[in-house]
Length: 144
Image (tube, rainbow, N blue to C red):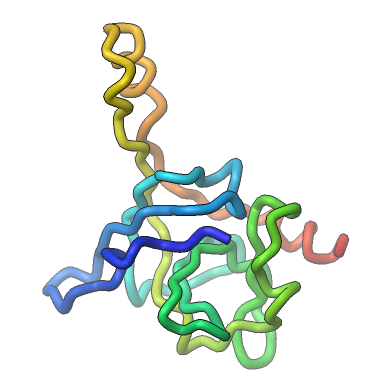
């Protein structure tokens, strides 16, 4: 399951934004290991949004999942990679108080191994993008 680096904890600041780093494969292809996320803490969550939450059983562990469906008591969350696990199919509904924020933007750090002009151009064109809501998450939920 994608865990977030310990730097993902928001420090009390005037703006409710923070940066987090993804580790793990459960949000592939939307997010990959090593991606950096801009998280809007306290943002309103809607079905299909990619969100940051505290793991229900390990509350010191932050994870990133997709909010698939609103249910009594919280959110049903799923990873985009159905084979990775570590979502509500394992631990049930996530209470609202464990949902920390919504992911707004994703970028990939530049690889130091690739220094050619073509590699730089490819990185510039593909490294950053907004993380949009995916309304198809609820269809996957019904299929399980």
